[in-house]
Length: 119
Image 1 (cartoon, rainbow, N blue to C red):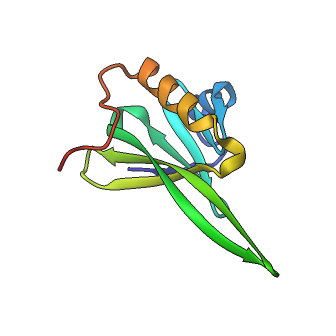
Image 2: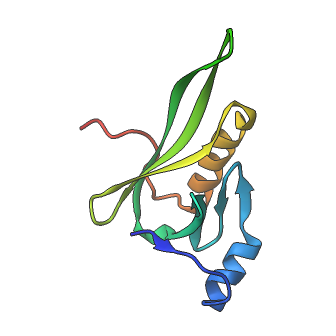
């Protein structure tokens, strides 16, 4: 289960956050995954993840007389307690970040199934 992350409360988590690689709006450390949602920062230990996959959602926007369509990339996680977590990686500006994040996640957690389950 994701925990609210506050700096200077856990030295181990702070060191992991500082050393984490940045993929769009997500940070992947050696022990945890970090991201922001609204004004809060969250931390999820990698050992709690049971499956990971990527989701791309098309967003239609209208600005004045023009329409502007773009895609939003999300990291979807199934956790040990059976819940799912939806984490925003970024919009079209971050188009290479989702692939790099999935590759790094697979390298760090080789036993973790990557891809949407068939259920």
